[in-house]
Amino acid sequence: MMQDKGADMWIVTEEDRYIYMSLVPAFDDGLIRRFPYFLVFSLSEEQGELEQISIGNMDDIEEWGALFPGQLFSYEESLESLVSLIEKRDPQKIAMNTENMPELVKALGEYASRLVSGKDMQNRWIEYRTPQQIDVYETIVGLTHDILAEAFSNKAITPDTTTTTDVDWWVKQKLHDLGFEDVFGPTVMVWRSLEENEKYGDPESIFNIDIPPYCGTDTVIRRGDVLSCDFGIQYLGIETDIQQVGYVLKEEESDVPEGLKEALRRGNRLQDILAAEFIQGRTGNEILFAALEKAKAEDLRPEIYCHPMGSYVYRYGIKGGVFPKYSSDFGPSIGREGHFDEQGNQLPTRSGKIPLNLNTAYAMELDVTYAVPEWDGQDIRIVLEEKVVYTKEGLIFPGGRQTKFHVIK
Image (cartoon, one colour):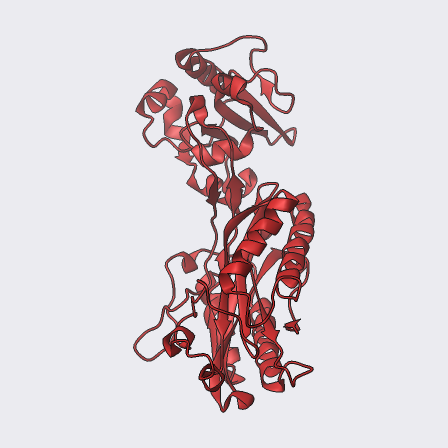
């Protein structure tokens, strides 16, 4: 990353809170006061080596080479040590975020003229995924899928009795039993034929096709309902964000109606079209409009709203302060839900101007609208969301994706 950005030194300070915390090991409370003040990456092009040096009070952490082992430093002493290191290494370009740190810039003296913005390095660090992380995605995506499959089964749902809120809490309890936390959600939603809904008297407004039916509070799950669940988990600093669909069989049915199967197939087709448009260097907006053009040519009635998936930090605070769980992401967005012009065309987004890089992760979130013959031509939106990773091999779905409805009998 430093070579790509043309920097031969990258300095991270404790002011760069989320970047900083993602680079150091987790501490217990007794070690908080011994955080280093500066983390330094120094790249030697001649030797092709990268040094990582901590300046301050983390001298006993093996993976960081302390400049002066066995000593503790004040901030002023650490700043002097940083300047000494810079003079010794003589970097030509120093990437660093100097916002709110005028004393640091002043201390650098003539080297301040060699400073370049550290924002690009920080953003690239946030979005980059190592091969090891990509391998882990297969595990945690598979786990998310497994939990969803069990939630959308008769283990968790009894038709005409179980509510959407019951399933929300079932998922939370399952995650707790497995030792995980949910990043958000779960949110269980219902799509229903308005003709079928006449039997139950629920307000038709909560099944409006124009917006996701956030009827996730105590809506009784009925036979003939299409269910959707959106949730994610975090593990080893990375996250999932998954949305899949299920169907509750009517008494006389042995399979999902063909019209609903066709709606899901169209959703999978839109995923295929979008995946083919992930090309390195393209912006999110370019990917969006290329995919929409092809999808509309196939009469898919698409909407696309993908977003990058970032790093997840949950640790003690710097200098003993509270440091809550935090998800930080960077990368191109590819559309935004409900972001249309007056003619119903999707609009570009501001973060859609960001180009696509290799080894980056996204939530591929999208939907297709389809008139279901078995529902007397009533529209349904099939919303799908899967974790995807862009690598030199192209876009991959670690852990797979949904191609069939989960079935509740």
